Each structure stands twice: as structure tokens, then as C-alpha cells.
Length: 312
Image (cartoon, rainbow, N blue to C red; front, side, top):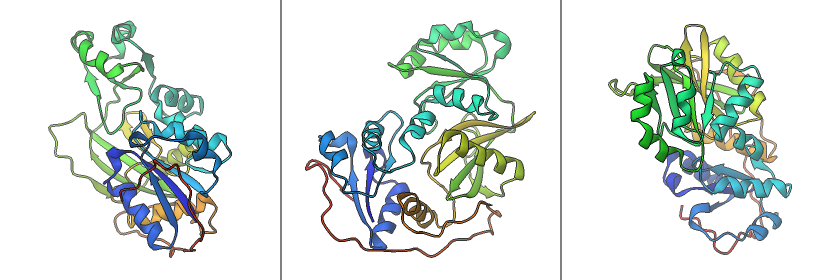
């Protein structure tokens, strides 16, 4: 198959998706890498050439890659994940509205373009978690215990907001541990680690089994947002699991043989006749399962805009 990965400089040397790209190439597939933030892009040529079986996006939330992916999708090209679904989770204000409408256990969410507008949130809702709507990797997340603290954070929050939105959600009381759930071709894997809101605790991460309740929520996340490869962050609150974040192409940290699993999933979504696993929860640290790779070498030229670079 011929695949095009849109890869921001931030992830150029990251294990995910660099190892996925290497795995696909080792299986005989042709993979081009475009760095949207470091290339002059001929938008018309990029989306009309039709040289690729699928486009895959691994970029920062506010990066230019999603625009190029959406352009490809608008021309009828296959994208992984669906471009509209990616937009639906990368804008966290939009994701909150979609998730709540879909019946997912998300906290109530307020959005504002100016930090001062957040002062209208009733004091009874504090403590709050405030973060940029286009944030990622824990960037700019603040635990705000009181309106006074919110006022003192005004300049910092204004810088985070930029031209976008800030979102605020009531803090979910929990044990201080985040559960990260990864979905790859219908399989679920999970890890737990101390919350980024608890910097006093060492951030050791370990694999854990996926409970039936969290598995049901995780599959529902894929259905509500229309995602195939994704991850979600879950807190165990006093009323049960709460989804606090959804990612369209996460790190897949500690997923067994992650590069091969994700590579097979990409091929399946691109139309390769790869055997796809039935929905199955990870059995925990000892539970591993996978199918052998299916490789096929394509011939012929791969045409990309002349300015597109690889560098891998």
C-alpha cells in the first residue's frame, strides 16, 4: 500500500508513530512523510494526485496538519482517523458537547475566550480544572481551588487562550491516579499513572486490566466520536468512571508490540485485507495477543508536493 503520514516536527523522533512507519516499510509498504509545519504545501496537488491509499495524522492539536488532512478527506481520500472525528476531539469544548450529547460520562464544561468570563461560574462548582481547548500532553492544565486563585492566574490563562478558548470543568474527586485506555483495532489496553495535577507523586506507569464498565465506556467513546484508533483518560470518581480527555492518536504507551498493532490497524483502515481482531479487553500485564503482519509491495511512483520532506 501507499501511505502518507502527516508528522509535525514535535513528533519527528517520537516512538509513536516513527516505529509504526518503520514497521510498515519493513513489511514492504510505501510510506511518505510530510511535515506540514516545515513545508510549503501545494494544497491542490496534494489532495488531487490520489497517489496514496490513506493519509494518517500525528500532529499537535493546534498544528496545520489537520487542515491538510481535512482537505484530503474533502477530495474523497481515505484518512485515519476520519478527519471530522479528529476535529471533534481536538477541540475540547466541542468534544465536551459531543460527548455529553452522546451520553458519555463527561464532567460539565464551560468555555470562554477570556479568563475573566470564567468568574461567572458559581463558586459551588470549585475546585475547577482549567485548560486550553486546543491543549495536549497536559499542557496548561491548572487545578483552581477558588475564585481568588482564578483571578491570580488571569495573565497566564490569557496567554494560554491566545485566539482560542479556555475550558473549565469541576474537579472530579479521585485517588490521584489517571487511567489511560487505548483502543487499537477493537482491542483495549490500559495503564494507570499518577495524575499530572499531582506533581508531588512519581509518575510511574503500569499496565492494568480493563474492567467491564470501563470497556463499555471506551467502546462507546469510539462510537460517539467516530474514532478507530484512539485513547481516553478516565478518572474513578465517587459516582463511577468519568472521561476527562479523548485523543485521536495517542502514544499507546506500554501496549504490547504497539508499533505492529497500530501498523496493522492502519492497514486495515486503509483497505488492506488484514485480519481484524474482535473486540477484546486486555487481560492485563500477562495478556498479549496479535496476528502476523500482512505485507504487499506496491510498485509505481509516489507523487507528493515537491516541497514535502521525509527525514526519517
